Amino acid sequence: MNESNQRQFRITGLTISLVGIIVGLLFVLLSGEILANIVFIISGVLIIAFTLPAFIQSIKDLRFRTPVAYSQFTSALITIISGIILIFWHDALTWIISVLILIFALIRIIMAKEGWAEELIHQIPSIIFAVIILIIGIGGFLDILLDIIGYILLVLSSIYFIISLIALIRKR
Image (cartoon, rainbow, N blue to C red):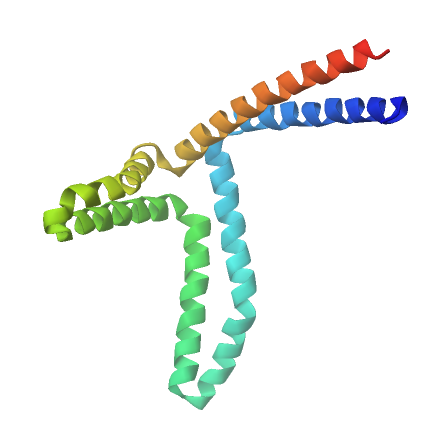
């Protein structure tokens, strides 16, 4: 590699590491609760927007009074209601889903009868996840996850920045 390409490679390394530091800081400083709210609202709006044409068509098709028309209308209506729930009641929804995960894990353990210990080992991640969501909520879980990823990204990007900077200075 010639000198010009090496210098450009080192400058690119500095730029990438600075971007990593900025993203790491954003992850550390960003609230998981706010991020969860944004994701749920965007998801709900997109679900409603993509289902609305099918819902309108299913209303038009109700005039035929066929089982297919009723099932398409019901399906589209349930999907739109799900989108509304995601927008306005996502905290309750995550709580309900966590309880269901916990119940299904416990049912699997109970149903295993003689192999319950092995099933318990398989269900521990589900149980831990459900309990964490029940205790701290999805926003708290995302907050912890973003903090961990953010600090790792900060450390690695800072090390890469220092190495790239030293390499750039040495070659001058």
